[in-house]
Image (tube, rainbow, N blue to C red; front, side, top):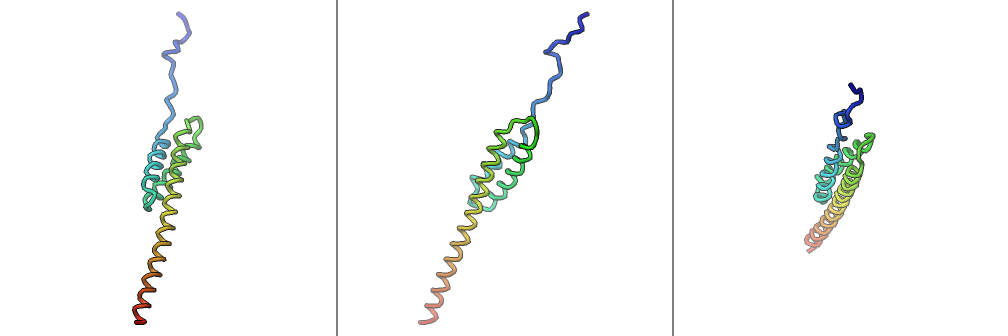
Length: 107
């Protein structure tokens, strides 16, 4: 009997799990698409956290997680810019209404 093992029957390691990277990428894409609303920012935060958790794992492919983190942060930034723009527009509209009310009261 030969004591050598067949390489085809040798146990192999399971492929690394990409679940967190995929979730990060999907949430990043949704964050960019929904960045003008608050939900885009929330999805961006969750996507970035999942991507960073995946990046800390040793021996796993990292490209998809980096894309997920990047898109999540872009979505978060879009959401923050939308909130600032909405607040600015809201204050401008409020100023105009107050000005119109004062003019109306003076007449």
